Structure formats: structure tokens, C-alpha cells
Amino acid sequence: MIPPKPWSHHFWATIKLSFPLMLGQIALISIWTADIVMMGWISTDSLAAGTQANRMYQPLYFIAIGLTLAVSPLTSQALGAKRQRIARQVLRMGIWMATIYGLLTIIPLWHGQSILLWLRQDPKVAEQASTYLRFVGLGMAPTFIYFVLRNYVSAYQKPTPPVIINMIGVGVNMCLNYVFIHGVFGFPALGLAGIGLATSLTFTFMVILLAGYMIRNRQIGRTRPFSRLTRFKPDVMIRLLIVGFPIGLTLLAETGMFIVGGIYMGVFGIAAVAASGIGNQLAAITYMVPLAISLATTIRIGHAAGANHVRDAIRAGLMSVYITVVITLIMSIVILLEKDTVTRLFLNNDDALFHEVMAQASGMLLIVAIFQLFDGLQSVFVSALRGISDTRMPAFISILSYWGVGVVSGYILATPMALGPIGVWIGMAIGLATATLVLGGRCWRTRNKLIRQNRFDLI
Image (cartoon, rainbow, N blue to C red; front, side, top):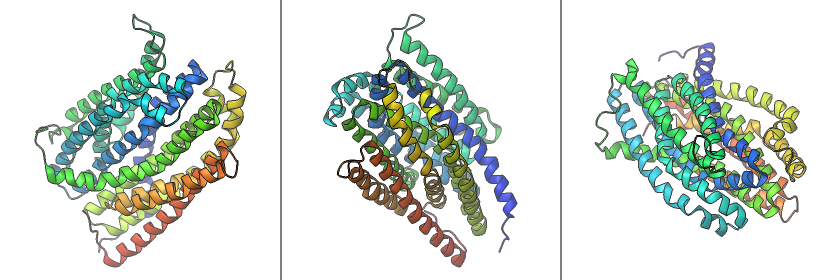
């Protein structure tokens, strides 16, 4: 039996891989954050319309993230087993999958206004969101292809290039937002719709940059990553779907809880929708830190699983848990101290609803601070299982926890118990806590099983 590497090795290896991934995730979410901030600067109505539009396409978006995340563990396992050809086939089928799914998502986004009206949203909000959603839809395929390329490069344990490209993308997106919102350099002033167009163009540009890096990089480029792109490999596509679709359901279960909660905010008025949009965005920003650790966990466990190093895989997972606990507790304290300051960044001080939004957002951000630990740990637990291709049962656990517990308790607290918007957020926190406990239990049982059999059973 090969002895496991020391704990210090796993600590520094996790930090070394997580830190650039963290910067990359923060840079990526900064694109969406800049969009939300600029929506609020236009008006509270635009912020509400953009928030509800985002919630409409987010289910499609997060399914895509799950599907493309399958590229990371399958590539990591192939590289750990020194099977470069299989890794290249995973990339090729990932691009196929991202393209097909991205084109399909244009259909519902093109009819966004009708869907929002069917969801009983304010007609003014639905009308403003319509053109924005159409422009966002044009960029869905490039966005998903970018996720495939990023996950593939990260599986080579080269997270820095996507970080740099993400940072460039933030700058490009902010400039394009300004151009298309206000109509400079001869372009028409598109307002909210201009933000959707800017985001689509930004991700297209980022795909070109990252593909160029992959071709020029010595280690990745010599494998000719984009050769034979037209050749379809059904067995590899099936593996991607088997691993990726449950990941998509898992992400959809969690984010869907927030999406449904956000859409339900529409019954409490525009101020509640805007405040919830701010709370969601802050939660998304802080989630990027444990998410980066989770991505590193999947990659490190995937490499260990491919090489059949059981104890190293277990230590890699446990180290991620310890780091996540410390970091999320620190973030909770920062949110509690700075929640009012952060809320003001998203609002126009002269807006008529400024004080009402501030009051509602304060309570929502208190809940965000409370659930940081749960949100971080559930992400690490599910990513550790993902590293060994265990995705179906975590998907079931997530659906049950977030929808059976989170959504139901949020509705009960908000309406029958008359707590209003804050009740929805308390319910979401309960759902996250439930998922953390159940997924943690599965990880512990998996650990014990691996120790007994001393081998991995990969798909």
C-alpha cells in the first residue's frame, strides 16, 4: 500500500489550486455583479426587471454549469490514469454538448415576456426584461463553451490562465455595458437590453482568448485539443451525461430554491424583488470562495481516484472541509459588519424606493451571513463525491433538501405564518442546513467504504 502524502502537502496543494480558482470565480461573478450594479444605477424598476429576467434563465444556466462541470472529474481521472486521448475526447464532446444545449436555450429566452407574465410578474417588469433576455440568449452557447474550456484547463491543474481571462472579461464587460446602455460611439442607447448584449459579446471574446491559450500552451497544445471536432463519440457523450446531468440537477435544486424564492418575491412588491436581488448577488459573490475550494476538491480527488490512491483522496477531501469552515465563518462576520455598506453599492440614493429596499435587504443579508457555513460545506461535500463520479444520489438529496424542505418551509413562513419576504430567506437557510447534514453523512459513509475496500469504483 502506498503511504498517503502528509497533511501539510494536502493543505498547500489545496490552497495552491484553490486560490487562482477563487480569483477566477470572483472575476466571473464580477461580470454578473457589474450587470446588477448597473441595473440598479439605471433605476429600481430596471433592477427588478433584470433580477426577474436573470431568475428566469438561471435554471437553464445552472443545468449547463452542471453538464459542463462533468468535464473536470472525467478529464482529471483520465489524466490521473495517463490517458490523454480520453481527456481530449471528453473536451470534444463537452463542446458538442455545450453548443447543442446553448442553442436550445434560445427558444424559451426568446419568449421571456410571455413566461414572466405567466409567472404573474408585473407587466412593466416583464416588458423591460424581454429584450434583455433575447440578447442574453444569443450568448448562451459561447458562455457554456467557455465553461467547458475552463474546466478542461483546470483539470490540468492550470487555473491561472482562466483567471487572467476572467479579469480581462470583467473590464471588457463593464466598458461594453457603458457603451450599450448609454449609446456612445454611434450605438443606440439600449438601457437594460444593452447589458444583455454586452454580456453575450464578453463571453464570446473570452472563448476566443482561452482557446488561443490552449493551442499555444506546450502541455495542452501538443495533445491537439481541438482536432477532430466533428467526430462524435457516443460513449464519451453518455459518460458526460451520466456524470453531468445529476450535477446539473444538484445545482438546479439549490439555485432553483433561490430562483423560486426570488420569483415569489414578486407578490410582495418591487422593493422586495430589488432587495432580494441584492441578497442573492451577495450570496453568489461569497459563494465563489467555497466554490473554488470545491472545484479544487473535485480535481484533486479525481486525480487521486484515477491513480487509485484512496487515502490521498480522503485527506484531500477532509482538508477542503477544514479550510471551508474557517473561511466561511470569517465571511459571516464580515457580512454582519458591512451589510448596510454593501447594500448601498447596488442602489441609486435618489430613488424613491431607496429606504424601503435598504430596510428589507438588511434582514435578508443577516440570513446570508448565517447560512455561509452550510452553503460552503454542502458545496465541498457534493464536490468530493463528484470527484469519484458519485453524482446521482447527491442530486436526489439536494432536490429533497432544497425543494422538499427549503421551498416548502419558506412558503409556510412567508405566507401562512405572515413573516413576508424574510420568511422565504429563513426557509432557504433551513434547506441549506438540511442538505449539509445529509450530504456530510454520505461523505462519511463513502470514506469508510473506501477504507475497507481500498479501491475506487469509477464509471
